[in-house]
Each structure stands twice: as structure tokens, then as C-alpha cells.
View 1 (tube, rainbow over the protein chains, first blue to last red):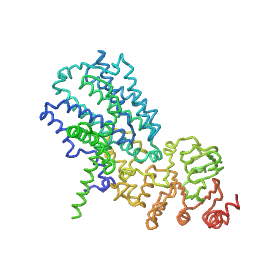
View 2: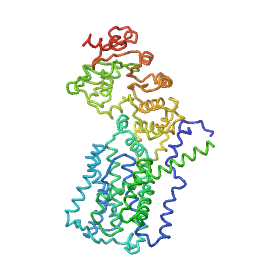
View 3: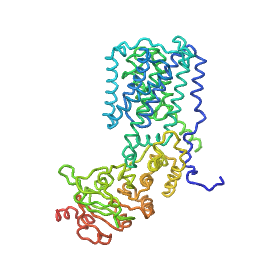
View 4: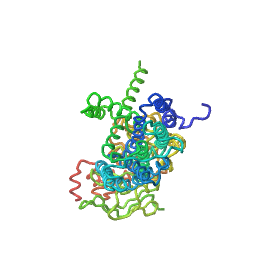
Amino acid sequence: MISPPRAHDHPGARALTERHRLRLWEPLPWLLALAFYFAFPQYLGFGTDLLVTILFAISLDLALGYAGIITLGHAAFFGAGAYTVGVLAYHGIWNEPITSLIAGAVVAAAIGLGSGLVLLRTTGLTLLMLTLCTMALLEEAANLGHDWTGGFDGLPSITIPPLFGLFEFNPLYPRTQYLYALGVLFLCFVFVRTLVYSPFGQSLTGIRENTLRMHAVGAPVRWRLVVCYTISAAVAGIAGGLWAQANAYVNLTTLGLDRAATVLIILVLGGYGRLYGAFIGAVAYMALQHFLSKVYPTAWQLGLGLLLVVIALFARGGILGLGDLLFRRRASGSTRS
Amino acid sequence: MTALLETRALSKSFGALRATSDVDFVLEEGARHALIGPNGAGKTTFINLLTGVLMPTAGRVLLRGRDITHVEQAERVKLGIARTFQINRLFRGLSVLENVYISVAERVGAASNMFTPAGRRRDVIEEAMQLLEALKLADDARHTIAELPYGRQRLVELAIALGQKPQVLLLDEPAAGVPSAESHIILDAIDALPKSIGVLIIDHDMDLVFRFAKRITVMVRGAVFAEGTPREIGGNPDVRAVYLGQATTGGAQAHG
């Protein structure tokens, strides 16, 4: 270097100045997803479901993994997005796919903002219970609002017009659904990735690591959390909307504890606060479900439970954290020898 | 001349307990002031009143003559009051540089930016790295807090506070828990603080206090017990009785 050395050129600063740069392997998941489209045309329904799950897990990662907002009610926003798309389409109000997704995101964000303003005053167990309550209230509202939501039966069939007026949503050959979900996932991912590497994202990790210190450096902590929670809710709403469009129906499972718990398991399994944990976790979860339910059809969740116990005890960073650890050990081992 | 930071008849009660009572206190521009007192004297409560973590029951807090008694914590930080904590409050999972980055980004108003990578705010990184270099932490910039020995963690505690470019710096036992072999790094860092900052240090370590302070306030049971130069305080028999000597209980009875 010829220019006079400045402090931010110090090698110690490189980890931060280069953190946001695209790593060599980062196109890999997208190439794999495209390869899947061509290699397994008969499994595109499953593939679409996987992509939607990944997007939902990414939304949770933003709130839980980055900002440390402990929530067990994230399906509230998934369901809000799904029902928004479903109700608008079923009652013939609006069904253009992309604008419907945006509507789903807006409704979910509004619920995130409203509930966030109240419940982000609390932390820990209280917060956990309040997120659960929010979801239960929404679920009950969807159950009772029969005229609009179809109540317990849900909205059995909604029609989604062709994407851009060209590509049909065919329930038997869900090619459009798959590529559409992949495109939406990609855009949302780029957005979330930008966000977590920004100064705003950095301040979220600060809140996660030490809330009291964030107050002491003058950060508007609660406002940051509310903004993060709202954005996270919007992304979850998009995932829910996608789910409704891909399946062409909506029911109460989009809002339930089952879905909220599953996405949490996926994130813990893959590794939270790591951006790609959502991908790894969703694939691992689906693979486990597939494999274990074949071997032990009645008790496959037992195997999943055991694995989670192991992860919680020995690998807090999930599968990605475990990989990180092995990689580092190997790197330090090779420099020593 | 108006004082940098001043309290007038500042009081704080928790129920029947009077943790701070009628404290009149002045911190001058560029001061090197120490606050000492036995355990439970209300030193940390007093710091919490100055920083706005707690609101007083009565009395006023003035910053350069401006009444900030009812100004919130975050706002006081923006006005230039920073502090360190007796027990480390660091962003443990993050790197040393990220710890200081967060503080600097908050001060310069970069922290609400969602769309520029944090690594592109060269101005923030530059300032954070300069702070780390001044505290001889630059080589640890990429390490997480958990990887550092405790003494160096205490330096990060100081670096985060300095990232606020404070006018008033409140140091709550900066060398607490640091092995004596490492404590000189903390002392050197405190000696090297910019002269313009008014520093108030709370500590039990009398070597540190007498080396550092130009003025000492002794607090007992929430009230100012004595104030003066180190020589006056060191020679004050009452202070020796309640604090510096062994006869803590005897002294408290004599004045109680």
C-alpha cells in the first residue's frame, strides 16, 4: 500500500469492512434450487413448500436470531399474510399475485407494529407468552369470522390469475409456483441480507447481546425493536401469502402453534442469527421428517426431539454453528502442524 | 463559571431507604474527581441519577447550568454524559471493533441506516479503530469479547464510553476484577484520557484514587460526608475512621 496507513486499513478491521461482501459459496443455494427445478419436476410441490418455509424461517431469524426477540407466535404473521391473500381472492376483491402478496405484507406488518408496540415493552417469558397470546387471538378471530374466513374449514379454493398475465398456477404441475416462490424468496433474502449487514442490523445484534448497554450508548432500543419486528412480520406475511397462492387454499393451520413451533425448530436446527441457518434448517428438517417418518411412522417426532436435545446441549449454533466450529478447529490445527 | 455537571439537594428514596440524601455536588470542566465511600454508601445510585437510569425523588441535576433532571437516559447520552459499568456490560458475542462501532454509529447517527453495509461507513470504522489504537486494542479488533482476558475487556468497556465523545465520563470501578498484573493498562488508559473531559471515578482502590484524583468526595449513607483535595481527605481523621481505616463500624456509630 502506498497511501499512508489509516486506522480502518488495519488488518483487524478487515473482518468488518469485508463482512458484507458476497462470499464465493453464496450463489450455491440458488444454483441448487434452480437445479432442483430441472432435476425433480415431480417434486416441485414439495420444493415450493420448502422455499416458503425457508422464507418464513428467515423472517423469524431477523426477529429472534438478530434482535433477540423471543417469540413463539410468529405464525400470527404468516397466517395474516395467508388470510389476506385468501380472503381478497375468495371474495373476488383482488387476486393479482404480486400486489396480493404486498397486501399480505402490509396487513402482517400492521399487526406486527400494533402488537409490537405493546409487547416489546416486555422481555423473556412475558414476551414469549404475549406473542403466543397474539397468535391465539388471531387464530380465534379467523375461526369465528366465518363469513369472511370460512371459519374452521378455511377457504377451500381460491383462484389466482396467471403471473404477469402469462404463467398459469397449475396445481398439478406447480412449475410457476416454484419459480415464483424462488424469485420472491430471493428478493426478500437480498433485502434481509442487506438489512442485517447494515448499521441498523449491527445495532440489532447490539440489543440482542446487551440491551442495557444499548440504552447507555443512547440507542432508541424499543423503537429499533418495533421496526425490526414490523419488518420481520411483513416478510412472514409474504411467506404466508405465497403459501396461500401456491396451495390455492387457506386454513387455520397457517396460524397455529404447530407452524410457529416448527419454524422455531427449523431455525434452531439450522442455526439462528446466521442468515443461512434458515436454509440448512429447513432442508434438514424436511429430510429428517421424510427419513424418520419412513422408519418410525408413528413416533418420528421422537427422533427429531432427541436431535434437538443434542443441539441444545452441545451445539447452540445449530448445524451451521457446528460446521463453523469444525472448520475453525481444522484451520487452527493445520496452522499448528 | 458554571460547573460542567452539578447536583443540588439531590435525593432518592426507595421506600423507607434514603439511598441519596441532599447531595450537592460539582464536577468542574476537565475535572479529575473521585467518589469514594464504604459499600452501600449510594455511589452507584448517585451515578444512576446522573445518567438518568433513575429519576430523583427530589433535587436537581444541571449540565452546564441547564436543568436535565427530567431528561431521559438516551437524551443525556446525546448531551455528552457517558459511563462505564462496574460489571462489564459488553456485546459479548461480537468483535471488539463491532462493540465500539455500535457506540460510534449511535453517536454520529449512522445506526438507523438500513441499506448501506456497516463496513462501508469508513468514517465510523476509522474513528472506532483510532479509539482501539489509543487503548492498544487494535490487534484484538477482530476477536470476540469472550476471547479477551478480563483486563482487556475492561478497556473495551472504556472504549465504548469514549465512542460517545463524552464531556462527562463516569467510571464505575474501572479496575474492578482486574488482576493486579494487568491493572496498569487500565490506569495508563485513564491517565491518557483527553484533558477536556470531566471525569468522575468511583473506586475502592485507594492507590488508584489518590494517583488519579485532584479532588475527592466521600459519600456515607447516601450523603456527602467530606470533600477536598486528596491531601485533605487523606489527613481527615473522620474519613479515616469511616472508610480509610479499619474502624468502619466504629466510625459509623460515632456519626450515626
